[in-house]
Image 1 (cartoon, rainbow, N blue to C red):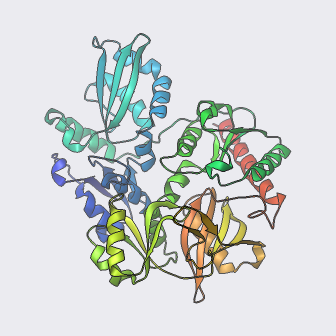
Image 2 (tube, rainbow, N blue to C red):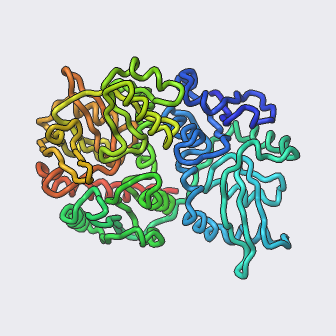
Amino acid sequence: MSNLIVVNDPKDWPIDTPGVQVVAARAYLTDPAFAQLRQAKVFNLCRSYRYQALGYYVSLLAAARGHKTLPAVNTIQDLKSMTLIRFVSEDLEREINRSLAPIQSSKFTLSIYFGKNVAKRYDRLSSQLFRYFPAPLMQAHFVNGKDGWVMQNIGPIGASEIPAGHHEVVLEFAREYFEKRPLPSGVDVPSGRYSMAILFSGEEEMSPSDTKAIARFQRAFEKLDFDVEIITRDDYGRLAEFDALFIRDLTGVNHHSYRFARRAKAEGLVVIDDPDSILRCTNKVFLAELLTRAKIPTPKTVILHRDNINEMADTIGLPCILKQPDSSFSQGVVKVDTEEELQAEAKRFLERSELVIAQEFLPTAFDWRIGILDRQPLYVCRYHMARSHWQIVKRDAGGKERWGKSETIPLWQAPPNVVQTAVRAANLIGDGLYGVDLKESNGNCYIIEINDNPDIVAGYEDADSKDQLYQRFAEVFLNRIERKKERRAHR
């Protein structure tokens, strides 16, 4: 297995590390040789993990390539969450105060290198913080108040910020870690009785289900002896009260739903959408890399960056589609017809993200949507394009929307190759709930995208299977809770 240290500039890692290749971040993202590596450990020491910056994409694409990465993208998001930081500070209160008791000042900064500190007396605290936030180089900031020491903040530092006097010690910590398996973050807290929380902020928040569908979910869970409560974003601190969380709010890496999913997983709940599915499905760069690697058919797709803009028209052809990595509901997606439009839109998109998706345009009358739950097909819909438009929704200058019609058909009526391709693609993400969009063209089917948290609206996605659709969700949650309890009983 190859060990790669990825930095913004190779000069940022001034330590000689035998057996490790130091790679510039842009090279790791754009050089095909790294994409073709079958096995690699990637230690992301970029100066910044800001959303959609180079450091962010190093960890994101490492996951798509099947490389072990430190930090993972979910850790990058956790380091930004003040709510999670407060939760960890409270959880580690005893250890924090034990470790910092001898310190006389009111503030203290703890440097954590691969889960350790240069002073042995802080190793236990460093190790525990590393379990929650597995990132190679971090600093945690503590303040001493009337109630004792609390962690005020924790965040990554770049390799270039390591003091020269620490270089030899950090090298030894890194060597030790390279031979270990990365530690997981979070904790697994035993849960109580069968209780279900449905996160639903209401239809006005563009939730993927309407109130009628939520009521049908609730009835299905209650039939299997669940106590069901509809919760909102204000109930974050109550998640430990439940056995399971079902997210029916919009999802996104910077959305409260992702924080709920992360906290629910840490608390030992069964959760759909799980945080990994949210993270993977909401970035189209990740999906493009993942589908290409698995050789699943897609329209001709290229990851566009500043160095290949001028090649796009020849590579993809015109017209083509440009997509922001986190686009949704057909927003952040444009069709360009000319070289001039391509250049202008590409530059505009690249102002927001280091990488953008460029994709061949395949005109069709409708898209297939295959709903997948627990690795099995759940429902089949045809989403037709809006009249005189190339997408399923058309927005005018004032923001008014006009949607194409939606048809739900029995599963057995759908073309087998469409359903099989959708299941195969969704299985790359996980075993949660997904909506896979496909196009048929010239007798072939192509994956357009894999959505976490797909729409399930009363009278639409449930039009064929009716209450059986909702009952399937209740059965999946019940089976997962019982399996989790069995595993705990045998520990």
